[in-house]
Length: 176
Image (cartoon, helix red, strand yellow):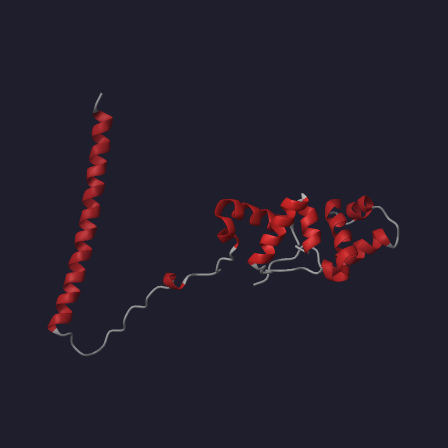
């Protein structure tokens, strides 16, 4: 599943051409098309540095840890703003780098590792075993009864704990 792209590459390119080729102001083009002029400024810089490739959407891009660390070190050494770092390293959004900074401050280099997405294998539920037509052995019957009694015992313990907690709460209310 890809993320939704608000402005496609053709639209961005058309707006950039309006400014660069037709000598229109950034403000007028942005206002005419109902978006913030800072976006258009960023598109122009990406276009000037990377050509029309710089305007293509980069959905779900995975960056290597070395690349992330290089970006963060460059920001620190060269005192780059997030926007300047995006342009220099062709990262689509400042928020991506901001998240890297946040994770790096919290966990160091380990925070820059990509986490697996999706449901963990341990989260998959086990299917109920299909009942067979053959009768259970005495041992299997006893194991099922033990499991049933353990469940009942756990349920009664939880119920008892809830009753005691409710009584304790009631006693606190009635004491002056």
